[in-house]
Length: 364
Image: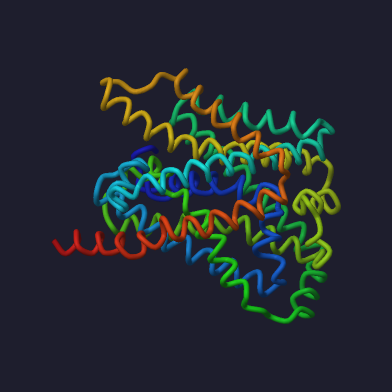
């Protein structure tokens, strides 16, 4: 399967992208409320469309530029795009990585406290332990574990939507009919998507087998669609309790606890807990790939598994400091800071110089 068109163009890139997104974008459901559902039923769908379109454009530009220049790790990619200014992006990326890991730990801690009754610190430690463990076993295990986790998530979302639409379709229909359409979700959705896409160069290890621009386009579109499927499912689910849902700290958990069987809640918590950890794994794997190339160029060999795990361990310990702030505060502060910073340092060059480099190389 590893060499098949479906695997290298659709399955692995989409799975890694969704896994990288999940902890920071969907882990608690709070993110969906903040950037999508608070705009109302129709306004939220408009925000989701804006997110999907922005994802597709960013994915295509980053992955196509990486393919054309054979730059399969973030430092090489940043060198082609930013030149000497790449240090600014690297600093910003490392800060964003730590904050992203902090959101994963905070979300995992909050879920573990609500469901298992343990402290948030213990739940966050569990998430970080999974991250270090998977990084230790290498990229193949990382990708395979992501495929399993995302597949389980897909089954959960299908069943969740089936139950919600069957038993609560009337409430959702009432919410759509009673709430006026607003379009301010377009700007919010674009801001949300751009912030998430600032990490794309860390995921280049998932697209090393792309062979043509057409394949890059297919990858970008399918990964963008995969990236918003949980948003669609959660947003529709939330509308059965709108606007009450807006004030919930863990809206997904709150809704499922109230409408789904207890057994489903247990399975959901387990899958989400693992996927929150997978977000950290997906991002840290990109750092490991880049460090391996750097170490190999200097020593003639890549880092050992112990080295990989050590780098991951140091990162997650630092992230735990940020996690103490709390999930709601983290989401608001992180997205506000990163959206502006990534836009100036990364996206302006990507949409100008990056697009020009792709066009120039194609013309040549």
